[in-house]
Image 1: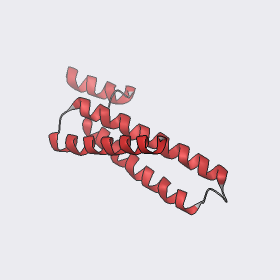
Image 2 (image 1 turned 45 degrees about the vertical axis):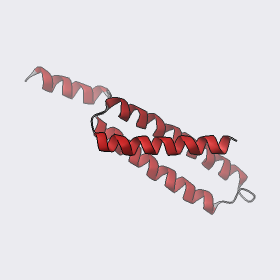
Image 3 (image 1 turned 90 degrees about the vertical axis):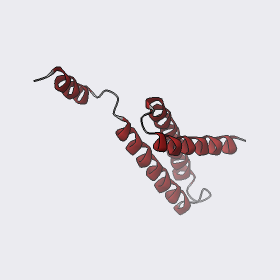
Length: 103
């Protein structure tokens, strides 16, 4: 067994940083999760379900923060230029959204 295969197996067991493909998938899953939360927010109007709405908004903001963090980590890896541009645009759009709602 080579040293590389031992390290690869140990990294997967320990849970070290995932490769950029896994980060990209995590970003896409986060976007999907955010979309589902937005859909749930439409189902539960704030005036009728204030506690549910507050929880969903908190989950939505946490999801956006996670997408931004994963996106920045993906950009730090810098392996795929085209995906990097896409991820950079995603990050900028979510940051602009967060700035807009904080006003």
